[in-house]
Structures are given as structure tokens and as C-alpha cells.
Length: 360
Image (cartoon, rainbow, N blue to C red; front, side, top):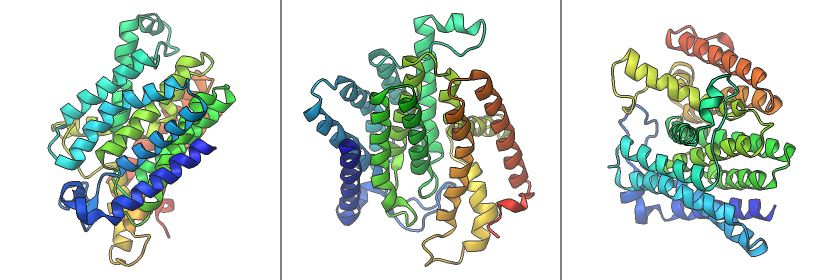
């Protein structure tokens, strides 16, 4: 509990200070590009919320070292996260780091976690493929790909106030619960500490959007969630490898669908931004036409978009928590979730939005 409180209040205070002294760093930290296809704010906002989250988990780790001097695992995880957070923060400050460079540094962080923490996917519960996955090189390569992909996925879904951060909190609470069930207090602690750190940032980000996660924050959350998801299955054979996929199904599916849409359907580079993500469609087709003129309302169309996606993510997280030890149930849930996602996306993009999705 002390670690959770330390993470929350450290992140909360750090975020407050970043906002309070915005005038001193806004020329570097401000997101002043208001014209991009994924830009929905109307004024320059600091995009270094990841610093607050990093401060939170660092404070919690230092506090834990005072009571448990042998907590090498936590320190190692923090060190592994340095490349992915560092490259994301560099992009937030310079706006000059390309997608490929960010992915390379994220892959380095994933490789460090796979090697030094044992975060490796060694089975998929698929006959034949599991024999191949037992080869260390194959397992590490697949794991690096998976962790890198999910880290980038959190950056892709980070489009509206409170969206990526709250999905991270909900997912981490699910990871904490399953860690408790299987008797792994370390992973439960790491999940709760990150959730507390994100919450300290979240209260300033939602609903007003006084500060943004930025690439550093999104990549850090995605990396942390991905690593713990893999570690749960790696450390506990009774946890299905499909649990890691299902509990992160929304950001994973959003990423895969984005790659398909840009590369196959549009013939563009998957790294280019676009304005037709699922969350963007919710904003443009459902909420913005209703709330566009209400500038003084705290809960504008931007803020009202995120709860739609929180519920969508919960549709995947719930079965992951219920059937964490059953690959059959999780595979069936993944198929059903994918069908639901594609059906909803198609209905919204073709102006046939189901009536129950409208606020009234």
C-alpha cells in the first residue's frame, strides 16, 4: 500500500509542477501542432506526462528498496524500460524522432526484459507451433515482437483525454488480480504501482486535458503492461499464453487493423498518421456533431469519447480475467471480440452507427 501511495502522490505532484511551470518549458514540451489528423486539442499542451509516471514508479521503487534491499527485479525492470521511455521522451521534446527509430529502441528494451527478466513467450497452446516456440531464439524473437507491438499500440490509441491512460489502469488492475490469484505478489505490486502512477497523471489529464501522455508516457505504459502480461504466463504455467493477448486485445486489434487499413486498403506506410481510428470515428461520427459548440463544458466531445473505448477494452479484459487459465475459452473470446470490433467499425464508418451508441 505504501508503494501504491508513493507512486500516486509522486506522479500527482510531478504532474502539477509540470503544469504550473509550463511557461518555462512549453517551447520544448508543448504540443503546438493543432493541424494533424489525430489532433483534437485547440491550444498548446505539455506532452511530457510520461515524466510524471516515471517519477511515480521510481519513487515507489526507491521506497521499496528501503524495506526490501534485495528488490533487484524492480530495478532491473526500470532499467529495461529506460530505452523505450527515453526515446519516447526525446520525440516529445524534439518532435524529430521517426517511427522506425522509436521501434528499434523499444525492441532493445523488450530484448533486455526477455533476457534479464525471463519475460519470454515459450508456448501458444497450438500443437506443432509449441515445439518451435521452445527454441530460445524463436521465443525471444517472438517476445520482442509482441512487447514492441503492444508498446507502440498504446501510442496509437493515445488520441483523446484519458483514453490510453485509463485503459492502462484497467488492464493493470486485471493483471494485479490474476497475479493475486496465482500467488505472485511481485507482479501484483508492479501492476499496482504503475496503475497508481498513471492515476496521479490521469486526474490532471481527464477530462480537461491539461497535460498529455506524449510518446514517452504511452510507450512506457505499453511496455510495462506488455512485460507483466508476458511474465505472468512465463512464471506460471497454469496461466494461458492467450491471457496476455486477450487482456490487451483492444490496443492489439487497433494496431493490426491500422496496419491493414494503411498498408493494404490505402497503400500507405503503416507509420503515417490517419484520422479514421476507431476512437476517431466515435468522436467525429457520434459525439462531435452534438457537443462541438459547447466549449465551456468540461465533458466536451473529446472527453466523452474515451468512455466508449474504456467499455470496448473492458469487453476483452473481462473474459481474460474470468478464463485466464483456459486457452480454449480465451481463443473463442478473442474471435468474438474481433468480430464485434470489425462489425462496429464497419457500421460507424458507413454511417450506420447502432442507435444504442448515441448518447441520447
